[in-house]
View 1 (cartoon, chains in turn red, yellow):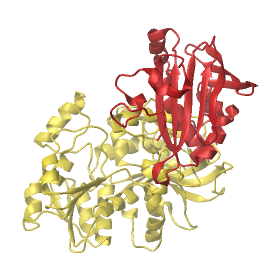
View 2: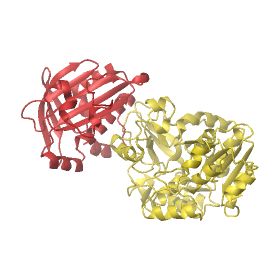
View 3: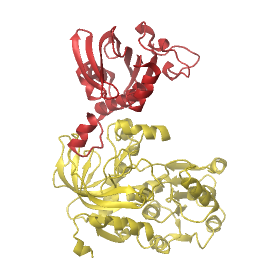
View 4: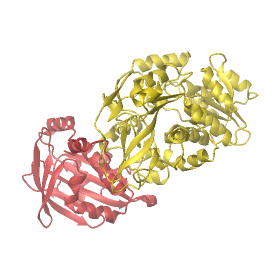
Length: 195
Length: 397
């Protein structure tokens, strides 16, 4: 069905494996960047072409990717990413699109010299039963400071696994409802929340 | 504005807080005219619900006048609306199936982790009911920000009193859904545990759905009297053995359907309840669950158990064997309020259902803390407290 699933003796995605080599999951992306892997799927009640188009316009991403401060185009297929890191810092990298199949897949890899080397792919697949689209984010990354950096990041909730799950929920909310749910009840609370 | 805020176990206060504003396009701001204290608010008051923060505004049963609308709202300023306690988007898969309380998008993304961990999935948002259900400011306030206002609130025709329609926000649909989940057939005997508001509305609903007999169970004489007024037979569990009485009153068969409208703070001195209480206070378990155990044991073979009662966590000694061996059907869940509101509003307007009998006390919002104390301490006489933010203190006295 999909090339993010490789035969291992069962039908579960590789990102749910108990013992994981990240090199397995990114497969056709070539040499992966990083040694931690995040994979998450969400079902969105919208057609995949619409979801792909919205995601492919990278200027839309900071609206729902909580930690992404900005994505600036550099040239065709390359973009400059500024992303929040723990303790009020930001990290930056330039990313290249490694594969782009309209309505199906966007894959990228960071260029050499990235603060957080990373590569990944967003797959858009028809959900069974006419339920819209399965959007799967698979991200391999090299956390700053290795294991310790990951623990610190988790404390500040900038850990990519938590972040990916929440970001996909925000993407779903924006696509299905036209807005992102918030419990803020004043503008000031809201500004602090999205800051 | 003024609002009832939570500060800890048995500590709620009316404070001055910021006025709500429109944040998202589909929002509306409601000026609250009536707002009730719910039995489930007492779970917060008693400190049973985790993820509360000091200063949280409580209240999820409210109605009022639309004073401001976002660009995506379908409401108009000046309309009177009743607001469902569940915050649901109307556009996800579950809302499409009218399973509004299972909405995918009602909770802010960051608040979904807790329910995902405890329940396996995040649920809809709720007003004024802890951060696990979204951390939304509640309706025991002068004003409320209502998200997805194009889907939730129902417009009330001119000239209909608040008291007649306020309970469309939660307890009337909850009692109705409980009876519907009991799959009542003509000739059925239905037993209802708990004669609080939801239990009493379940009694009414069960008769409207064709039950031949309803047996109501409680230990507060006044509440049993209210159930009797709607035609129910009663069991006072302090005077009679409930299981034995139910079997004798049904010729040994047991009730065809059992409705547990008690939930996680079951009262009464029963061995399993006392053990639950010890565990709950030592964090070994969170829910006290005598009523659901008894409902499963008493229910006839092949019968239905409906559980509108609120449970939040884990119980043990659950009679899973009885559920399986007797082939019972168990149906439960938070109420899909938006699904039931239009039909129930019509039933109220046509006079088929009257809910005003329930209101025992009307207080200004300023006396909300007193309202909680009364509702908590005098459960026999105080059946329902309605707070009226516009009511002046002199008139209440």
